[in-house]
Length: 260
Image 1: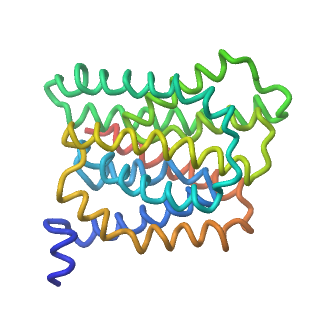
Image 2: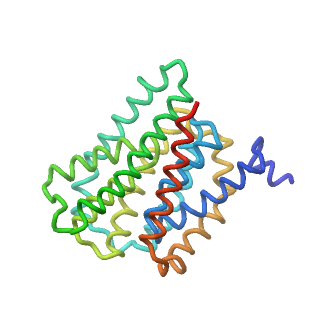
Image 3: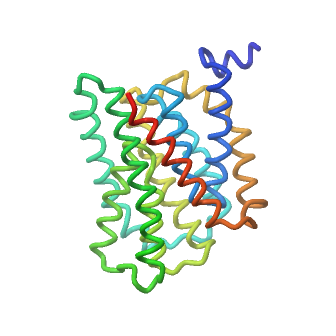
């Protein structure tokens, strides 16, 4: 009990279970099934304070980013990364400004933050479905440099506000015709760079606290378990069917965030 209280002081049993489930999903998402990323966003936002939930997730993402980069370290496409990162960094700055000078100054900042996360997730769920219809053929996905800038910008904004840039980046990486390992390796490096840049920003904003950091440290075994499942087990499952189910659950959970 002392160990549990040390890592999860003040958390209910339900919150700890949600945290464990989210950690496993994040691990799977990083190493084997990119479509799982939205569900932990809304699960944590529902069960934890809206100011703390993105920080709880970010530290777990940053830890599993290291695992993903180690596993896919030789598969990244660096010319593409250098093309995407500048606009993504600008997007992070825009997201920071929206939070600091917009959301945080509203009378009901907590609900507005939940509303923002919910709307972003619903939009990205719809976006993920539409992209599979509109850009079913990879040849139809835009490849112009301006498309990379737009994708990077919106990925930066959504990752700063809600750690939810995965579906946006999936569109651009789809256009590059990567095999799965090159896709995963490029995404792993991309998100590790962005997430580790975000860590001090979140800490300075109070979105990562000493208590949330300790809780994340308690999740390390479950993050590694999820990463292992992503690599060894779930890559054999019908990914498209599984991702559609996750999108549906994510949308339902996001709708709950919209209800005051």
